[in-house]
Image 1 (spheres, rainbow, N blue to C red):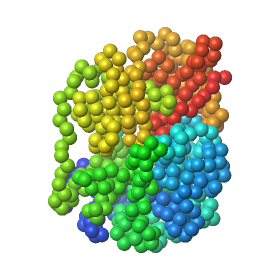
Image 2: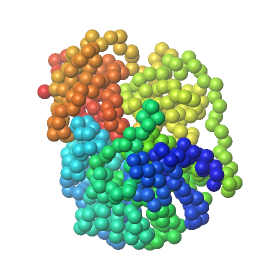
Image 3: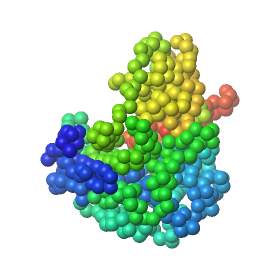
Image 4: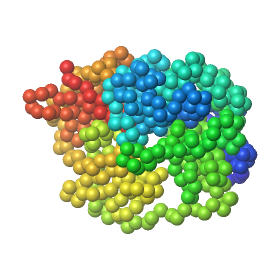
Length: 532
């Protein structure tokens, strides 16, 4: 389709990292094409048989293994996690296999924990250390079923459950139970990202001068994101949703089924799949990504339409491109476009008063209301979530579309700004805007060494050139000092070199006590460090 070529014109060059795209309609491949290069040095083209790390699209393969084991009577989605992984029994017996599959367990994300512990997890985090970060957790982000919060740890644990039940490596289980039956003969699960098959698409980061820098990664990914596949093999995966070669009763319905959270609101995540809607049709989708490589896969069951996009450069809007490809086929099928977003005359005075930083002491997360290119954006620990207006004082996240409470509501006044949050995944709070701090003359009171037995790390806080900064000590070793950006009297944001920005907040219960340090990422809330 010529319109798809137009969408991918920036990739359709013989000197840039590329992409591959497929569309499956009514069980048939109606579009398949590669663009650009998989390897800039060797000038290897990015083709439909080029091997590629699909990252978090792996999660739906992991949950499919779980459904296969359930079909065989080896486990149940209602099984307690601790029945299979005794190392996590201390986190409570009510967390189930289903909670792991649906990201409702409350277990923190090990990649964020690795960042907090000081690992450069893109290069030197081995499987043993990754598992230990998960097993060492003593507390949860939230009570099981209270929220839906994306955590790679859930799927690392699922891979461990599968390995123990099958008594063989997870890579072999994937090969024997999924890849071979579906004919996905170019798909595998390498030991780590550095051992991907020769000829795999390399990952690149775009530079300011328009050039591309190759990114080398060495991460022991498993059930959360380790599969290497090809566009051709992923087409076979999509066709399994049509013909159910694997023989799981009601396979697509079971994989796509969501469940309510404890408060009755429906979680937006099924079994290794995100769920949404497009033009009134149910949509299942998932992105995958690491620095340099990104992917997106979506399916609209009612239209028997699937789109796969693989890209070996970042930044890249893989989800946006996949959605635009799907829109072309929805237009062709005569599926009516949804009504345009509500046009609202905004009250600039009220909005201006509410712009700024808000801190949630329950999670340790920092929320910042900002103006985006077209509308408002709420940043969660530095990660932007674009908003669409519902009224003069209410906004929804882009994928929420006016369901339930507004994602962000301005509930204060110009003199006392407050935000009410009802974000996707069940995070709810009413927060008061943090006052602007006049100066940085009081930073010495935060200095000291703070330790956490939970992640076996220490933070050395000091002042340098009138900025608060930290170094991480512990098993991962000392790192370079990281400068902290002040957001409130005792709230600071760290924009580290990894994808996980951190909030550091200091809590002083009374003047006689030393402050405690609380560190949070978007996926790892409220880790407590005590001052030595």
